[in-house]
Length: 266
Image (cartoon, rainbow, N blue to C red; front, side, top):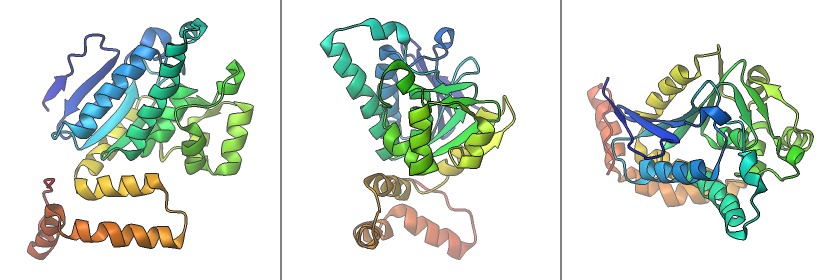
């Protein structure tokens, strides 16, 4: 198994390439991987690179160092009153959220320990969530006098439905990995310490799928298919493009030849 580690100077976000999978690790364990400004800047840069410039990467795993996913914002930075930094705090999380939801490659969350505030938002923005049964989640924003950010209004409702999302955001109550699985927030619940291994297996399955179809499907789902007309329009606009793709032709050839397809993006 060949591995390459990113050379980001701060190493507050580490990237390890494992075949077709990139494992992105939030690496600020002394503060439980708090979502600091530096982490936001670095995470956006790394995700953008992987999404748009790293052909070897076909799927992404997002996890945290030190047995914690992300415990939320860095409280020590919240004392700052500079207008520019306030704007960066507001804009960067939304840029990250859009990149995760609309980006062309699937992202799998591997959650151990705390996923509070922005940590909850990051997990919710992923395409698939693997959680430890002992993981702990909470919206938390209202407890520090803030509104949910990093797209949580949208992503939490997508995962658990509007009624439960409203309750979780307004109450800011904690829930564990077992409840996360029961409510649909998490797709898979595993024993403590097993989230990364399980998430990597799921990411490998995504990596073996046609990348062009995956990209178009993610974009369509992010745009929203709310009505019958939305669904029909998506099919009419996208299906002809995909039928001409090299990956579709490979899938048809592999089926006829009774072999496993090997997909290479156009």
